[in-house]
Length: 77
Image (cartoon, rainbow, N blue to C red; front, side):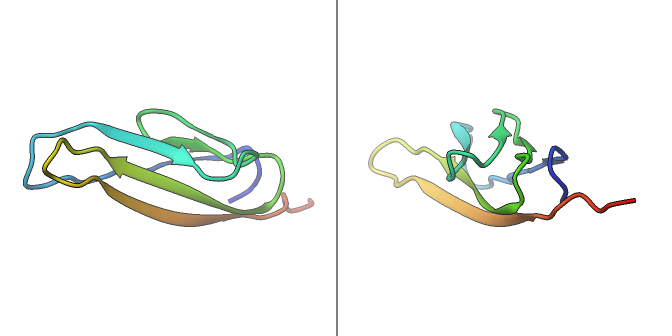
């Protein structure tokens, strides 16, 4: 990925009707992700962690999945 580009993350949930899903980026400067899972890469190259959390009601436990994405410098022409 290059700075400022976007990617749409998708989560597949089976075995429950619970759709209490949350997307987040671990690093404070790691770009932005909306509630639909569209991540906009930051302007600074680096490796960033995107997290998806399905929050469950008791007695069930919440589930979290993460992935790392590397943003490379914009290639020069």
